[in-house]
Length: 172
Image (cartoon, rainbow, N blue to C red; front, side, top):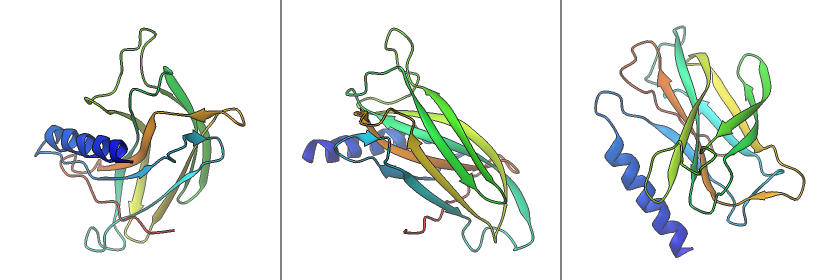
């Protein structure tokens, strides 16, 4: 438990040091189970804009990024994920998420924990909208992924391309 906490603190320090002032990133991350991330473990995200972001009729375009954080225990070159998005319609798909090349060089950035981000979709949202995203590993029953520590979403405003809008996470 202490090691996982230390890794999380190191990851946060790395992420904060890498933030750029002109385009800060804000997102919502959920930890995977300590026993490993299994095929039945679905992580749920509820994305809503803060009340003071837009007028209720205004729609803005946002870029939705899916991010995984992995430590040295994750030895595979990638992972397949099942992603379901619910906004105006329901979208279900399998997403191939490459994390390293054939020689083990990570595509992500970080020191003790690597963060890998991938563009998931462009979404158009207004103040009244709530986006629900469900992420599950697409593995064989009984297969557990060790080393993926966190899964998260980042929401970037495509309209101004200078500021990232906040994700308000509702507790389920």
